Length: 190
Image (cartoon, rainbow, N blue to C red):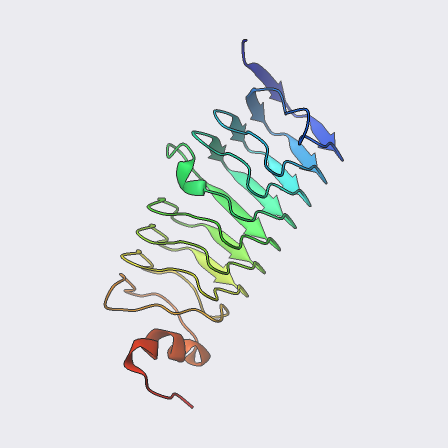
């Protein structure tokens, strides 16, 4: 079966849980209020696409290309972004639920997260250089051997980041977030 190429198309209120999105490449497409939960999106290409108010929870992203993909108001629970094609991987998230997702070893410099729930997300060994976590809940998120140099976490909250296990040079934190940087020392910051 040959893969299709779709450009500048809008998909609105489609349910792809029973009938999958045709395998292929999608460029400059909009997916609005679509349901992809538990869908197979493996080997697909999404370039300059936007996903608005979609549910992609537990979708299969094996070797999926996400280049300049924008997610807004989406439910993205348990996604393995670490399975995506690494080449030109670039995404941004606004108002999304990404709980229990994984970005393990994912190079994602300059990624923007705004008003997102990132609880229990795996950022271990991810390169988040110059990324922004604007008003994001990072409760239980894993940061081990992560690169957070020049990252902006001033308005992020509920994070625990060990500066001895992560590269945090020139990262920005608020005074209110100091407890998350010092938690391993079992001290009280008031």
